[in-house]
Length: 153
Image (tube, rainbow, N blue to C red; front, top):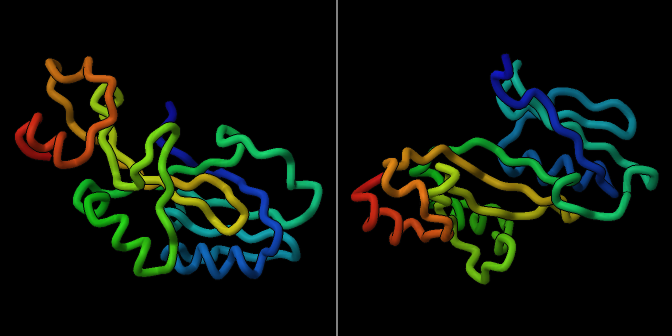
């Protein structure tokens, strides 16, 4: 029944600043109306809504203010450099200290994290095929560690 993410919503302090930021990420503005703007993630298929206003500035928790954008594995390998090229800093995930992308073998995905101008948590994520014998690995692995262990992507 469920095929993917259609929409997600994030609170923002300054809609103009957020529009510039999400445009810089390469998303296309779908429409804007007063204190709200929507950007296509996949045009005609999924989008993110940005809502300006004090009433939307609730206490932060990543489960409430987080979006993961689908990416390709090879793009994730270069994601920190791409983010730097558009003046966006990658951030460590959880207790990690590295901002480099990493693989979660037990979940079958890889990701890198960064924040928007309002501190909303954003993620680039991709599916990673994991052989059954490696599915039990719960450590987060660097791409280099993963590729040595799995023998490629």
